[in-house]
Length: 90
Image 1 (cartoon, rainbow, N blue to C red):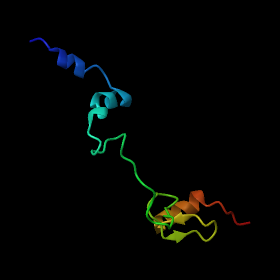
Image 2 (image 1 turned 30 degrees about the horizontal axis):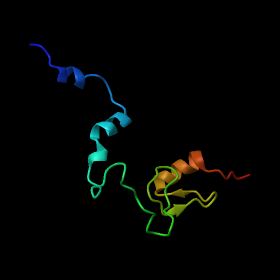
Image 3 (image 1 turned 30 degrees about the vertical axis):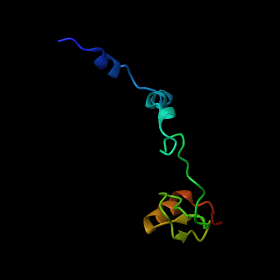
């Protein structure tokens, strides 16, 4: 059997993001349909800053008493105390 042109084209290698956008023909999509180029997120609706754990990145509830960095659990507190706490006691 011989391979068709479609099989050769499919194995031509990875395509760039710009190439994929050109191939999608986003300029021909109706204006009321959101596309990658037209979709945008607005500003945050909450005014309070979210607080994340300095070790794992999850939402945190606790602060380090020495340096003020945030952590979410006992395990993260132990890692923080061993490796990341910036206030050294003299």
